[in-house]
Image 1 (cartoon, rainbow, N blue to C red):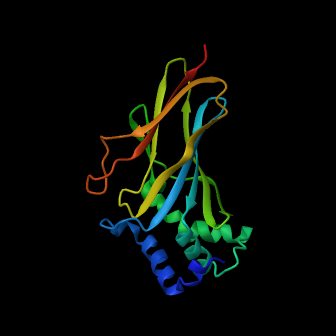
Image 2 (tube, rainbow, N blue to C red):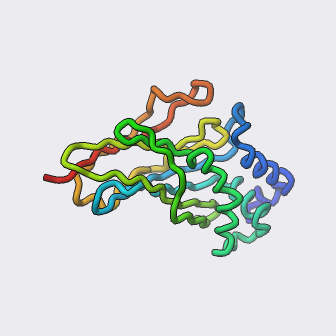
Length: 205
């Protein structure tokens, strides 16, 4: 284990985890959890099926989960640990729609649940994978869906990974997507603006 982690006390790590559970009250906090984010736009035969998110956490949050919650120190995470992680360090995000803001043709769509949650280790970093269903049927005219993932309290900082957006099963459709800062949606006292991906799609003629 890296020397840095050996000097992290379990008491300090526990405070970080406890603060994460109290996240709604931490409006004035600066980032304590750092997440590198990828979004996979998933289509099925009818149209848009939803979004698969991959969150890669920083090393400090990883050690909090491994040592304080799972009580392991050798990076030997096992399948039976996944339900515990989901229950204690993910499910509470439902109250915040999993830090996900979606609109369908400019109408809000609230993420109420996720599917296929998985937790794994990539080297010394904890990774969450999960799918957000959002079914939008394709027709011959364009439909527009937007998605942004961010924590408006800025306790957790979600940033895009390199090549953050991908498309799966889109062969039957004409698809366009772009990612840019939405200047109209400020958060954290108006100082920050989310990166938003806009997806336009329709049936091929």
